[in-house]
Image (cartoon, rainbow, N blue to C red):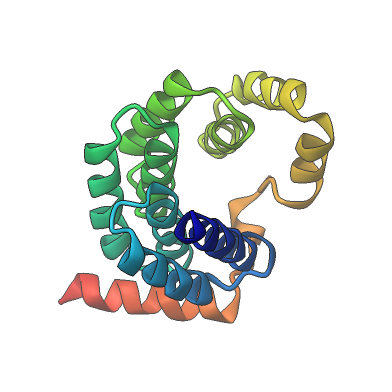
Amino acid sequence: MKKNEEIISMLNEARFLKNSLGEPKKAINICNKILEIDTSCRDALLIKAGALNEMFLLDEAEKLISQIVEKWPAHWEGYYLLALNCFSKEDDEEGLKAIDKSIELSENFDNLIIKAQILYLRGKGEYMDYVEKAKKIDKKRAENFMKNHFAYDINTIKPTLSELFNATKYLIKKKR
């Protein structure tokens, strides 16, 4: 029982580091410690894959996401992360297939708002249908997302220095 409590505490810390503090590398370190205890801890694998995506380590993230989807094909979050990975690689068609699969498995705020964002950036008018569905799930969060995170013009988004560095590393690896 103590092992489970320890893992839950570590998962909460990893989530907080990744989602609230923007510290994906620290989150990965904690996830790796969890995976030493339990190699098939789905939440640790999901947090780690999301953090790898954020660090623009897209190939490494894709391998891990593929393992997650293979092991848990009925879980929405693996497809959600796959969609984010595809969109980062500018593979919008595969990304849309993945986000649609995620929504099919479990329609929730996260996959609905990402679907809305991608449709908006692709010039598809039906994006507001997904924003409205997300608002029905969590109106306050949807309004906050639309105000602070929704990209109305992809060219105005300014990446952080860390994101630029990681993107540059990815592009250099890709050319080799």
